[in-house]
Amino acid sequence: MPASGTLKMLSLAKQLEREGQEIIHMEVGEPDFDTPEHIKRAAQEAMDKGKTKYTPSAGIPELREAIAENLTAKGVRASPQEVLATPGSKHAIFCAIAAALDPGDEVIIPSPCWTYEGTARMAGAKVVYVKTTQADGFRLDVEAVKEKISPRTRMLLLNYPNNPTGAVTSRQDLQSLADLAMDHKFWVLSDEIYDCLVYEGKHTSIASLPGMHERTIYINGFSKAYAMTGWRLGYAVAPAELIGEMVKIQQASTSCAVSFVQEAGIAALRGPQDHVREMREEFLKRREVIVDGLNSIDGFECIKPAGAFYVFPSIEKVGMKSAELCKLLLREAGVAATPGKAFGPYGEGHVRFSYASSIENIKKALERVKSTIEKY
Ligand SMILES: Cc1ncc(COP(=O)(O)O)c(C=O)c1O
Image 1 (cartoon, rainbow, N blue to C red):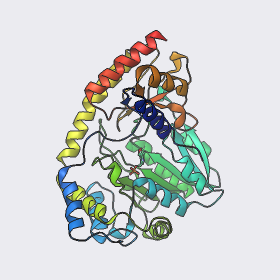
Image 2: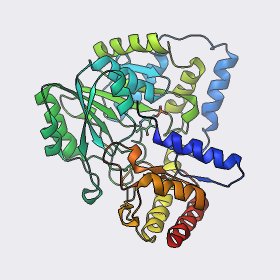
Image 3: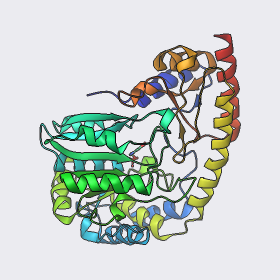
Image 4: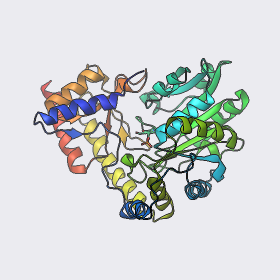
């Protein structure tokens, strides 16, 4: 099992903080905004009403309905029976992979990518990586995916907007990938947790394309859109038969998502959405500051990400490995970032900075990175 590179940096940074150093955290992927008040209130009211017991494993019916309604409004057809509420979308991914893959099955994953490999390995599946590159805007080349398909391919795992690259897959590319999935009869696990943070154009889900309702395991959650990382609430949407298998895995592993958190989830989906829009506007401003700032530092080359809240500049011209550079930045600049090598075999040569931090902090971090690199 590979350990999480982000969490490793976080624990190093925390250690330095305990020793008295001031650290700017740009390694972790969580919004710096607070959970909106009406969502917190819904959880408090649920507790006061005694909603503190086990719930059905797949989630309370009202939450499953709210998720299905929300998705249908986004163009992704879903019925409540096709929804599984989970403690965090990470657990939805775990249940999906465990239910859909057998030992020896292959899952194709574009890299740089988030930490899916450990989950696939737990299911005994083999990860087959496809490279995306900065020169190509980290676009997934459909022909490269095609070359990796074998008789054991059972799943293609997509994440758009992407963590760590911020790349968004176009409707046209999604259509070509959907055609491959239908021709070769494999699942598409579509992790769309950053769908609320697309800065150019409109987000399209592969699940909304003709014929893909039956082939997609759609993943989303509350952590990013509603600043609820610590609440642990996410969900999967898939054909009812597969959801039935995933429910068994949830029963065997954690029973259900937290009862009053599920009530908060209903309030998040059915309540006002202005906070999501405001958060997006703020990230948009921060993106400009960080991209310009990084490009002004010798050796850094940063493209403008189309979504999410990460930048993933190339550091090849700095002449250091990503882990070495991150350690230098942490110790000398007091800036925590995640080494590119944490994002699959094709992440080396890059560093990920999360811009889920105030503009003031971003500017301070950029100055410190710049002077450290100049000194080096
Ligand atoms: C791409 C991606 N998918 C899933 C998750 C997991 O989110 P959750 O907090 O819902 O488990 C993250 C968290 O950073 C992520 O970046």
